[in-house]
Amino acid sequence: MRIRRFPAAPAALLASLLCLSACQSPAPAEPPPPEEVFTFTRENFPRLDGSTSTAPLAEAVCSVLLGESREDTADLVQFSKTTSAYYNLLQGNADLLIVGEPNEEVLEEKERSGFQWEQTPFATDAFVFVVNEDNPVDSITVAEARGIYTGEITNWKELGGADQPIVPFQRNSEAGSQALMEKLVMQGTPMMEAPKDYIVATMGQLMEAVKSYDGSPGAIGYSVYYYAEEMKMAQGLKLLELEGVAPTPETIRQEEYPLINPKYVVIPADAAEDAPNRILYDWLLSEEGQQLVAHEGYVSILEVPS
Image (tube, rainbow, N blue to C red):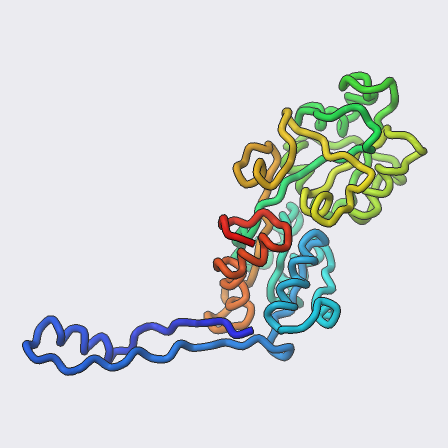
């Protein structure tokens, strides 16, 4: 796909415009220069990395910009998850990230290395809690969620549910959803130390664990809205309301749902204006790029038709 790039007006054109205001018989203005065009190819396509939950968008981007099927561009989207993706950018092993929130370790390494990046939201996501669909509890508060993960709330009857122990699953420390859990929910309060079996490496494993743990609806876990809802990973599960508000595209975009967080596109700050990663960065934030974001089921920053 060709990306339009509009150059600055040349000096000769500016001179002719000045002459128009100063001369009675101005010389004809030069015709506008042709627009510059950039074409993405496999050879110049930026090296991508990012979060599990943004991999489907990256597949769509590659497919649209290269004019190939998603299956044919799958080799370009081998995402290494949130934290590893940021380290790959810091170490020069990735050109552009489509990614969630960095954790504190990444930010500390960024400071130590003196690395500068440009990081702009391209979509809004929500942090959600999931339970088995047979769990009678439909809504909790942020404070109650925090209480579950500090170990203060241990039984569903404390939340209006059945007399049944709460089994709280966690993500591993390098997961983007773990960084969000600590930032949005725990807010500096330490999480309880979980048994090894309660810490899962991937979102898919967490969904499956919550759905089927011990054949009962006692488990709870957390994820991001896109992964749980749009990727249909929450089949057999229920997304809990928070503070009485259900996570939907409308409540997320309007910021009515209490736990929202951006998804980012990130490039090195020193990327040249005509570098492929900056051109792709700009395109994702353009109306055309935002239409693709919305089409893929993400809550786009711009209100655009999908």
